[in-house]
Length: 266
Image 1 (cartoon, rainbow, N blue to C red):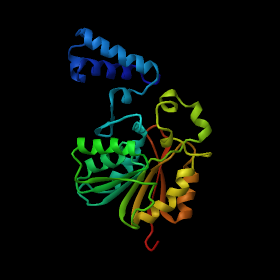
Image 2 (image 1 turned 135 degrees about the vertical axis):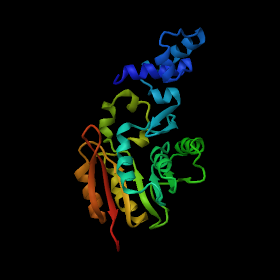
Image 3 (image 1 turned 90 degrees about the vertical axis):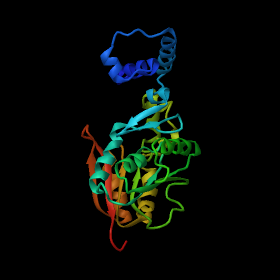
Image 4 (image 1 turned 180 degrees about the vertical axis):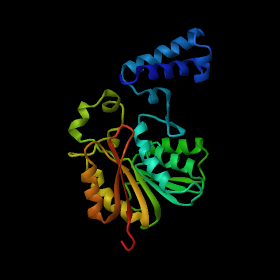
């Protein structure tokens, strides 16, 4: 497993009902029999390669904690690259509207709204189970008045030129590569959230035009991409008429995000 020490610590904390500070301050405290039983049950699930976030029912992302279930993609640190790009673009007190296509748990939308108190947004997802998770996260984070949800197929039916910012972390893994992924993803992540079609670009072929359609003039977008996809995704958005296209690397130095604008007059 990629991070056994971190996984173990999180499971012990959860089983013991302990905070990180408790672990540091009293590392030799014995667990009760009930706590040991709870830990053993969690370890059995982890040995089956169930993601820690699904075992705990929550996952930290950016500066927020989200409920997660098998119905949604577990948010990952590399996706935070989108937030680095977006928050540099929109000021702290700026009022703007944001659309998150494929909202899943609500990670991107709710992280932006938590950082920009004058913003409001809409999250769209085709999965009702995913929307139920996002709805719970909106309530848990106290963002009910600023975030709404819609069941839909990408931007189909969304009013034209109605958003200042559009975000998306679409499925981008080529279908045949999924069987080579780690069990945490291959078995436990929703296939609809990871399967990008034959070449991994199926979602972007729709999103390029649809995103520009719902953006206001000079509106901004940012989408996550997979390994080796930057040039192809940039080309798709360029063909759709996007301007000011850029790619952005994650902390590991991999091209992770493509951003751009809707040009005036488009």
